[in-house]
Image 1 (tube, rainbow, N blue to C red):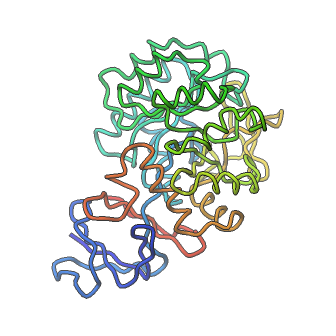
Image 2 (image 1 turned 135 degrees about the vertical axis):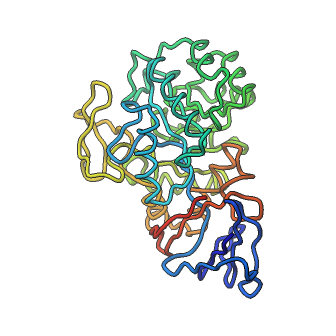
Image 3 (image 1 turned 90 degrees about the vertical axis):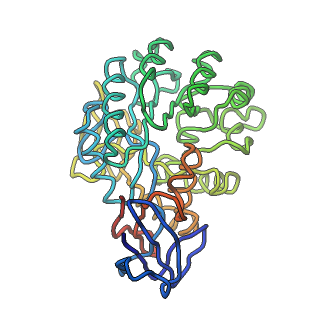
Length: 373
């Protein structure tokens, strides 16, 4: 048992003072006034930051010099988790970029082991592909996009993979496949797609509930052709991931999106690659060589290949460039992704009965530490 406090704690979207969090066996027992902390709860005072819910990153390809496509193993997951925890991420989805069946099997096995042993903050897995549109491939390998839908379903069969997120192109998948995924409890998001507005809305009616890195790898919003972006902004029950790094999306565009989505539907994601938490300046993705230049991960042709940012970077960018409050930025990094993935009764909020996962953060968004049971 222990109690923890700081000058401010983010509770229900508000910063409160003179308050303590009581923790037992990794679960929040209660929130109380400082003067009411029981004597049998040793009190720890955080002096170099406020306390907020730990960040939950639903799109993490790599970190610490490791790319999960190259190391879809428990050791790879550990390396990436360690790199990101230093920047406030206490829960995350290991993410596999379009890969072959064998690699997807390996990733599933590693994730299942991590979850069964409650290791490294792993809450599930994100398969970004292979059911994408080659015309919007980005750095994904189009040769691997002709995967068999049943083979993929077999990977999920009889496995406990926690919260599963699948990014797919609605126009490249069957309605039966999408509804089968949803029936299994899988969360599906549209990404790397040319889907029309009408098709996207139909997929939403089936249960599609998210959009992967909105604006990137999809057609633009036009006056008479709103497309997938129009559907994302227009559908009030869906969520959209945003890469806030100053490279993937112009800040003015991000502001417009946030005005529409609000922090309740906007999710900060990193789409992080090996450079995060490491000194790596170059890495390979399949046959592509990717360089880190001026904070960007780019191929020789200049195509963006994921990002070099952490969740701390995304939060700071929101404060400095988008005029977002610290509370709203943390909501997009913690509470909203938990709601999207259906585990908002466990993480993303500081309240009785929730997992004790915290980030210690300054008023400027800098992470000074984390706590995870």
